[in-house]
Length: 420
Ligand code: ADP
Image (cartoon, rainbow, N blue to C red; front, side, top):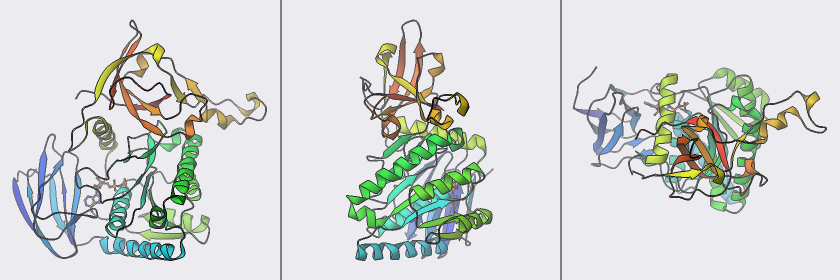
């Protein structure tokens, strides 16, 4: 336990300050006093206070040396000289060369996928590479296939964003007009058929958009993935690599995965092994669940900038709720020409019941159940905060005021207890 209120650190060139905020309702303020520093690829402004809250695990890196001040209680805070940042910068430089070539030849920029087990810094490396690209004036596309954390939108989804400015230190990448698809579970293993279907769909839509946006196309795509890398998890990764037609796969901290990908990927795909940072912190399953919860809370209530969601009642009869995936039957029981797996991507009508309490519902852009729902992206999410079977109504927490759009709602397995 440390009870330090004010700490000053003098960082040498090429080193970083790592700290964690653990205690509940704790706040730590970071300020660069002199020199230059960056946080996961975003430059810090000298003299500007940045706030970090419970659960934050942070590294402030400096290429040229700096002095940093921390105010508040940190559970851990130390300086580290050993970091893989030079290696990551070299990866960025190589991607940048490919972007220059793409620009000259009017071709597509590099499509890069970051893979590795859980807690090796995949999301962090994705953020660093996107930040470096956008700081060079590029407009890369950020794709997040990690349904467990859901950095774009909420957990249980996959999505993409056009990155037009570096991530905000406190709030991450700007969430304007993200492209989001519903999965509804926090691991791809819950429905592989559906996961692969939406990954292919997202890849297709991004390819189309790149055709109409030369700047994004030459800037390329950076894809973050789930930490599930064995057995079916490996197949999911190779399917994503194919769907996005990746050029580069960055493998963090797992030699077996690196060798498997080297063996199985076509020759034109560059598979690169990268060390993980010693600073990356392993999270317990409770911490992961807390992070998921915090992500959903942020979706409704905002992070630094507060949002004010609406709460209202909706009649059962005004709702069209579906879940994706009927129980699968053996092939011998299926109608002619249908595979058992087809059931996993079927829409099944859900009648409201107390089981919906606390569940998230995805608001689809699809107008009706016959409108290719799986291939339609999402407008957003609402959460069921109460079910009244007598009055036949649901109480809904929603970012938008009533009425709820009369489109299709998709039931997610993810839950959120709204005790804000
Ligand atoms: P993954 O995506 O592989 O699960 P993350 O990138 O989410 O891993 O990293 C796990 C945690 O470690 C995050 O909370 C992140 O902020 C933290 N982290 C990453 N790099 C560092 C570092 N160099 N120093 C301290 N914390 C770090």
